[in-house]
Length: 112
Image (tube, rainbow, N blue to C red; front, top):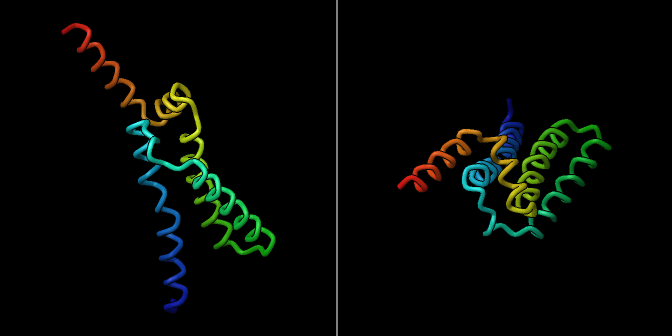
C-alpha cells in the first residue's frame, strides 16, 4: 500500500469516528445545550451533498465515508432539535441501562 492510499484510509477512519464521541455523550447525558443546531444542519447538508457527489461519480471511498458521517451527524442534529421527551425516548432505546439507573435513583430520592 502506498503512502497516499494509507493517508486516505486514515483520513476516512478519522472522519467516520469523529462524530462518535459526541453522539455517545448525547445518548448518555441527554444534553445538547452546547450544540449549535444550525452548524449541524449545514454539516448534514454538506455530507448529503458529498454522498450524492460520490454516488454520481461511483466513488466508493467517498460514498462510504460520507454516508457514515451523514448518519452520525444527522443523529446529532436530530437529537439537538428534538423536544426533551422525544430525545429521552430515543436515548432510552439506545442506552436502556441509563433509563433503569435513572429510575432507581429517582426511587431512592423519593424514599429518602
